[in-house]
Amino acid sequence: MRTMRLRTKVMFATLAALLVMSPVVPASANVPYESYNYNYWEEPVPAPAAYLPDQVWSGRSLGVGDFKTPSDLVVSQEQYVYVLDSGNNRIVIVDDQGRSAGVISSFMLEGKQEHFNNPQGMFITGDGEIYIADTDNHRVVVLSKEGELQAIIQSPESDLLAADFVFNPTKLAVDNADRVYVVARGVYEGLMQFDDEGRFIGYIGTINVNPSAADYMWKMISTKEQRAKMALFVPTEFSNLDIDAKGFLYATNIDVESKEPIKRLSPSGHDVLKRYGYFDVKGDINYFRMAGMGTEAGPSKIIDVKVRDGDMFSMIDSLRSRVFTYDGEGNLLYIFGGKGNQAGTFKSVTAIDEWKDRLILLDRTNGQITLFRTTEFGRKVNEAVKLHAAGDEDEAVAVWQEVLKLNSNYDIAYIGIGKAMLLEKNNKAAMKYFKLGMDRDYYSVAFKRYRKDLMQQSFSTVLTVLALLAAGTLALKIVRKRRQGGLSS
Image (tube, rainbow, N blue to C red):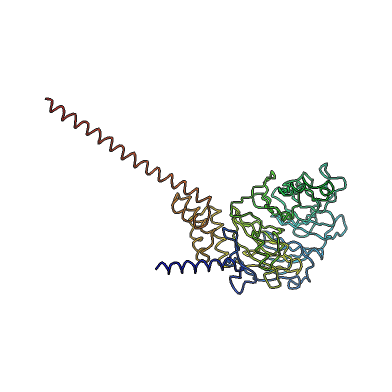
């Protein structure tokens, strides 16, 4: 019997080692990219695909001619898709049925026809106004939904700006108070902020570069000439941004060495993004392993972000053309996409948004838009996360249980159930699920509460026993006194 158990243990150990050593493979033959996630030990492991390619649009299929290096796309509240076709200096509009609904290539300014010049970014407000970062014209153009000029922001003036400053806006977002936040080329002080009148009012969210101990050491022992050639520790640039319903800005930066390539900026400019997951919110974690699997080496390069319902957000890694989706607490939910020529893969992914119940991504090189639909697994994960964010824990638990039927190794589901148990003060059950989800922090919280419950129960029991003993002792003394009194008489 012992020999059989030993053989069984060796067999399972060998199988586990082979799973860890083997490359991640698609969960289905129909998935054109590697479907994986990371476990507690930061190892990429196979996982069910959360999204699958559903449809591909091109300028030709929409009947407007080929796109040329498109740089951005935005979905309006009416579910119209606006594509910024930068190489053709135009905006292509697609209606809520996926049909071409018009093109904006010019507008009237003081009686003259104006054209865009290599525009790079776009934003649609709730009332349908179109904000365009008209990059090489050094301005932000504001149009109505009909394409009529509303305002222009150009050549900002301020003591905060250098005398030779050139305004090259690339990306932008607008809040409910019509304040405009702009990513501008060559600006390291943060996002440029303009008021509702288009006046420059300062910067928000400076990105500081934190040099490592090795950088300091090399600088100390280097000669003056060598130090002069070293890279300066100056702030880096933002690359893109989005804004949520509460007015918080989600901004990505181009520093691939940063552990925080995305920030959630409050109105005061402080980063309030929650990072409670196993690992940093930065895309691929074990990118050395990725290189060993035949993909590009190096950390993810985050270039766009889309804020979604339920405090979720999805961000694009342009290095490996993948999408990483997180919940509001910084847990990595799923990964999809990749480099390639098949539908669902990209040459140079550049923008992401959400259209109806699908995610849509823009490929700058191919000039194509790919629509992704959720699988049952992705749909259940999204539903559970939204229920948790809304405080519907009982319903969230039921959905998390369904997720576990699709992927029994999905740690986030165990953790989600554990949190629900914790709220219900079922600390023993919470400990079980946090252990399965490998969440040490929450396990410690549940354990402390469970221990406190046991101590309180034990304390009341001990008090009861002590009270009974005290009463018994007192009764015994009384009986003895009476007996002694009787004997003496």
